[in-house]
View 1 (spheres, rainbow, N blue to C red):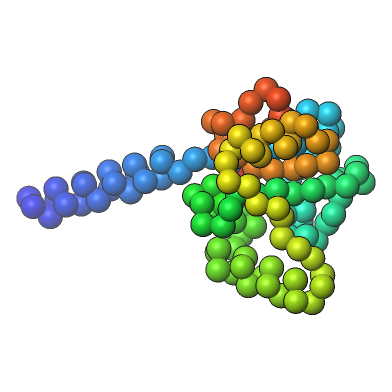
View 2 (cartoon, rainbow, N blue to C red; view 1 turned 180 degrees about the horizontal axis):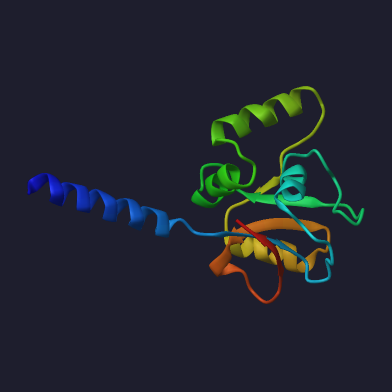
Length: 139
């Protein structure tokens, strides 16, 4: 009986943990008419592409390292751990092949930058996206 209760509690905690993870919305300026998939977003945020699919310059912005939003994006979109991403950018900087996205402290900062610059692409918790930006993908 005791083991059954432990099992049920473990299943409930696992389910609760999964529902607590926020969906991440990739956002651009409302004027951006490009289509995005996981690969195109990943290429921009890893510095492998410096342009939107249409050819316009893309300036990615991110949350500071270690935030739950940054960790979720890194895992679900970039398919890396935070440690792997840090090593990736260290190598890119050392070889002169790229620089990491500019990092912001808050969702509001990211929303403001994206809403006011057609070249900026960022990500926020999906529940935080406002009408001033365009959601182009969710993960």
